[in-house]
Amino acid sequence: MVDCKPCETPIDLKHRLDNDEEGVTTDKGQYQRLVGKLIYLAHTCPDIAYAVSVVSQFMHNPKDSHLQVVYRLLRYLKSTPEKGILYKKHENLKLECYTDADYAGDLTDRRSTLGYCTLLGGNLVTWRSKKQNVISRSNAEAEFRSMTLRICELLWIKIILEDLRIKWEEPMRL
Image 1 (cartoon, rainbow, N blue to C red):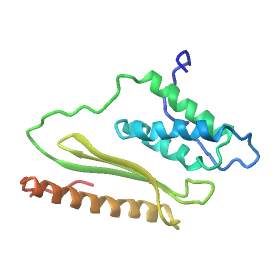
Image 2: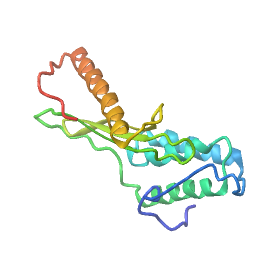
Image 3: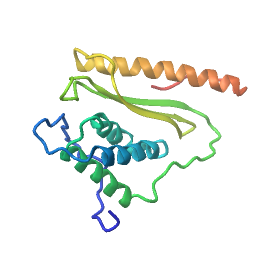
Image 4: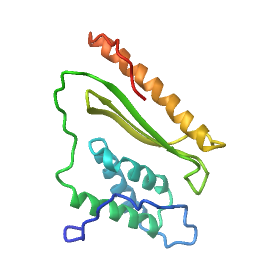
């Protein structure tokens, strides 16, 4: 894929991947190796975390449509070699968390996918994209579940900061 055409986004914004039962089966080993490497890379590239979580759901029975999304991810990575995480020193430490959930976004099991990122002093410290464990009955419930989990994470980060002898008295933003 060295000579491939670069892509602007890691996944189509209106994607709707499902099991594609009637699709052409692809090489399972190759698919699993590619997605495994992307999972490893997603630890330092939060911009691909959601797309990698989507394609990793089909590792047991990958189809050609799933492999095309993986190839799109590779084309995106080719266009963004300079992207990464930059940490800067700031005098004012603020703890902020942003979260979002898509209501019943998975076509197979109707579970919602949540995504979040946590910033400490303007620097990205945690991020994740994950399907929720239960099926939400409404968009409000999906969002509420996502916010509840993020509050738990903010409290966990506060405990870690106290272990590092950083007393946290300011409000945390969600």
